[in-house]
Length: 215
Image (tube, rainbow, N blue to C red; front, side, top):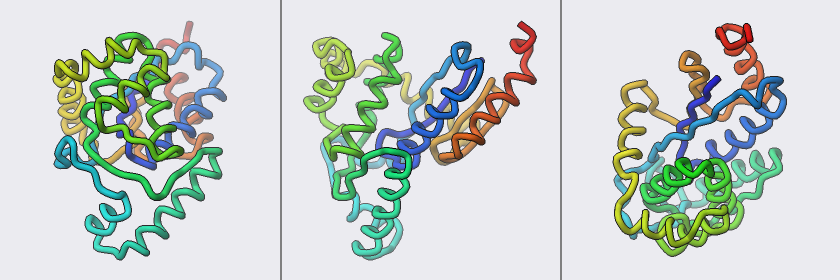
């Protein structure tokens, strides 16, 4: 059975949602028979490469709130992350994630998409590190077990740009407007960072309804 997940590496709900999905999958009796495929989704593709801003300033401008209100909202996200055992840095930067998504596609071809995505989340949210520039992404790729020279070549030569765009096109065609978004067995869609027990239930329901459950 296949699970497709659309997410962005700077999306806090995706960060929490991945932890909950990981717990859900661990509780699923047929986890070894589940193929998880990660797809690209940019929350703000209009941010130009090389540009970065404080996340509190971005939230203030985007949602018409004060920086103090944005900080309180981020503090609430930090509390939710902590409840899942996750670190969370409130005062971090935000930038263009297109290159990070290209790198995840490279990792996917090498069977390392999940470790890299997890490392990007950890670096960005828990440690406040950049996931936007080539030097930082190359170092993070190496930390996640990728060949840094191969990662740097992919970043420099524009590899996997079409794959990122194809994911985003598919999201639009599917009607996905927010992430995380889960598609289980090509039939069941779930939006948002759902509780782990709900996700486990959805996996079981999809498995029971699939011909694969008769094996």
